[in-house]
Image (cartoon, helix red, strand yellow):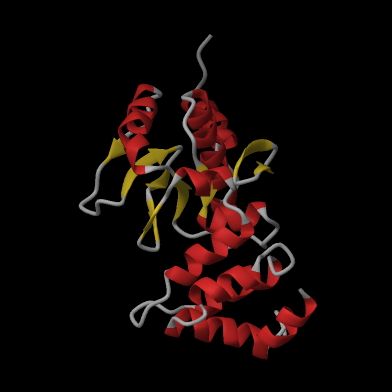
Length: 208
């Protein structure tokens, strides 16, 4: 039995995600499934990881996954075998894939710090649209965002709602110790104190 072109078009349209947010989530689930099937250690990062932790979705143009540098070739082989195109961009700290029409970054360096097994072991397994996968811990996610600040890229407004939503899950003592002396991360932490999102450092020390 054959369908008319109009019927086929209607069926194809019905199968598409209803919006960009859902499209990104569908691609996230598909990628996680392929990585799990391949037995690869990984963790969801970026704005979709923030969503998994409860942040209101405000997705960027792609999905970020963390992998260790020594597994990049094996990951690429797994994805290629599953029919997911993979390419190596000029940047030497990630590989890129295209899944269900969405761009995927498989990152092995977060904010100039290599992804290691310890980071991936700290990632809790959480549901993302009913598919369970490792997700960067709240503290590691905020750390990656703090490390991204520089004189050339310092969008506090984009990170502020993430910090506000994750304040109860985050080890602020660790973040202050690791990044408080750096100009841009330190300024952001000070902003969080001024906005009363996190307690001042001396109060935090007294409560420990």
